[in-house]
Image (cartoon, rainbow, N blue to C red; front, side):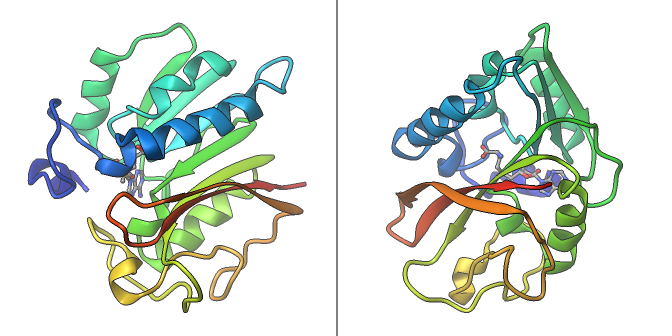
Length: 205
Ligand SMILES: C[S@@+](CC[C@H](N)C(=O)[O-])C[C@H]1O[C@@H](n2cnc3c(N)ncnc32)[C@H](O)[C@@H]1O
């Protein structure tokens, strides 16, 4: 992932680190902020939120004020160092961790936005095993339009399963993720005309 940022494989913005159009295009980001804000605002006291694969934090920065504590995590060390300098708030912290391997902080709600689409099935399962310990998991994935064969495997990196006509479905084999409840919060068209970006709230017991 470090190379993806260094080589600007997700494109280039005004900043040193750029997590891609999906993290910046207003037609994609604004509705996501709206639905997640609405969800977070239903809780008193506010939730402790863990943002797994926080990227350049253009999205996460808009949600910090709706959380009790906002713990933003990414595997790219220099990106986390940059975010620590750029974004400062009393309830905000950044950590450099591999979310498929390392112990994750405790919290009430996990946000995983356009991360699983970039990682192998082995990593997806390891991440799902960890997030099943949080009460709420809000997952966003870029998937094809219409019917598709889910979860074709990829090598972790810049690309997604879209190029294979596939996408992540955490409820389908080979994954064994068994949330108590699932509710789609949002579906928007991708800016490139290929597929859609779907956000789902999973509730664990
Ligand atoms: C496309 S970006 C999305 C960023 C952000 N979630 C957003 O929606 O704007 C995917 C991010 O996931 C991070 N990532 C991928 N695999 C990871 C892992 N195993 N542990 C932690 N972060 C990871 C990447 O470094 C990258 O910053």
